[in-house]
Length: 194
Image 1 (tube, rainbow, N blue to C red):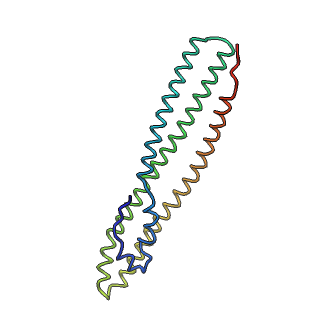
Image 2 (cartoon, helix red, strand yellow; image 1 turned 45 degrees about the vertical axis):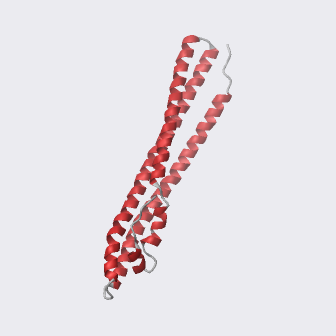
């Protein structure tokens, strides 16, 4: 859970348009740790898939030694080779996803740190400016400008993350559909006998 510094003075000085209402709602709902945990789980699953692919490779070699010639032997070996290539593509696709998730989590942590830094340093100054009737306009200006800068930064990052996510999801989805189709074809195709 994101621990946000208090932005009460900035929110008051900005007349309800401070960082607590404009920026914090999006930041508070992002959980970089959840993404990182999912990436760890994905890596563990991929380790199991890699181990399975290694077993298939060993079985392919054992099959070639036990059954060195013939059309059926060649067909079975070809099927195992194609399966290994598919496992490799699945592994590469998921590793790319894992890298992207770690990058996104890091960016989200940077956004959260920027919020903490800006609000943590500006809010006390705004509070001090609000305490004097003659400096209240300065408090409002500082609160609004700091919020606008922070909001602009967060929106820019958010837009980039949305674009990256859309492109990555589309690419990943297309790759997985292709791989699933190839696996289906591979598993349905009969091995020649002989």
